[in-house]
Length: 375
Length: 210
View 1 (tube, one colour):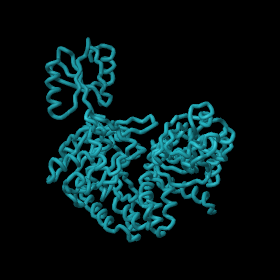
View 2: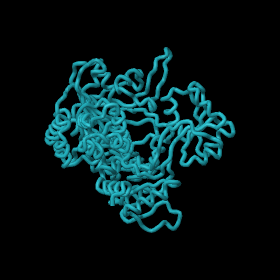
View 3: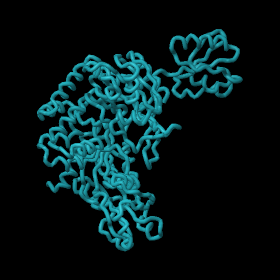
């Protein structure tokens, strides 16, 4: 887990993002203001000694938005965070604490900012050794435009909630009176993806501005050389109501749920008094760990063994190796017997002699070591 | 590439679910033993407890599943609900003993309600502003009012026979339920061809299109 976290941290830092830390507890009012309709059933609410209601954070974007809006209302900022979010799932044996890491790029509203965040999403997962990363790109405005064009009035909110719940049965029953192409597109959202999706969406003459934005982002992403991992997916439904523009989700073959999700939220900071555009995503660390065959570790650990009498020579070399950025675990042999550490990703054991010379142990040397003979 | 995995619920929906899959052109040998995994050509079928079914689909152990709307309403889940399969029709109702049905007439009366659907019950009473205490049971809910464990029940009814046999009468309908086809969000994307094929074939059978 920490290894995955470390990979993401290094990638975010390499892209010029700086860490921000916000408290795990925020006033309940912050959540109501930020999320519109916070999922009350899953919030962990506590009462402090003065009777104020606070809640454990169910997500990270609202607190970061509140933080930026109140501390640096005029800044253009590239921020990242690492921390757990808390959601209570009633009646299931699920865990309630979910470690996350993510980025928020505040103050820049263009397609270039979106593209950078999309490319960073791909790079972060690839750095964490996730194979077969796919990032889908949709648009919250397109979904809203579709719902607007459906002719629903009283039932619009019900339809939107059904959509958030991915309940296409209810949605279908509500859309009986909607224009056939709009109804067809809404009910067929899950397959509105891939190369044919944009032309098909264009033909609806609905949400054209949203599609223009999406195309601009796709074009800007090309420059990052991650294009092969990115595809249009207009069926992406993010259930936080603050998204206003491009939305993204990432998938990998080994995971039954998206590894990360996010999007553009240009009106969220306004709810905290600073009108700034922003875009970001959150990575679910446990899901990344589960779908990364090497547990997120890219650099193997170098295992070094030595006789106590060669300690100074061995450790001098180890210091140099560490200074050069290698990951080194050094262990003295106990009465000629070496107990390899829990470095199950080590690619072999290096043996350092008193004269400072070193060699990679061959299998027969390892046997010798395990039997208590000096190799 | 592994075959598409479909989870079917054991119990009252199983026979109809199997019939539907066969009518949609899927099929294979009848399971001779009590095995819970059947290989049906390009389809792997697993049989799971209805209450566990969403867990299998949500976590991707199964790509698709057949599950009652009652379970979808009760459990938090992150799956796509794509097709109303039409069978397994039943209703969720609040029922009280016939001699105490008048209790429902007073919206301020505190009721103790036994149910297998605590979240649905909580939502239903909360939305109506009615005071309630929920007693969570896993079976034979209709027993609770007879032995004084609760004032009434919130449970599924199909024909009403069980209610009558226990001297209960329906006072409010909470939801209507049929079997639904649900799909894992990643399978919907990563295996879209096979999923679309399944959805299409099932929809044609359900809608009676040859």
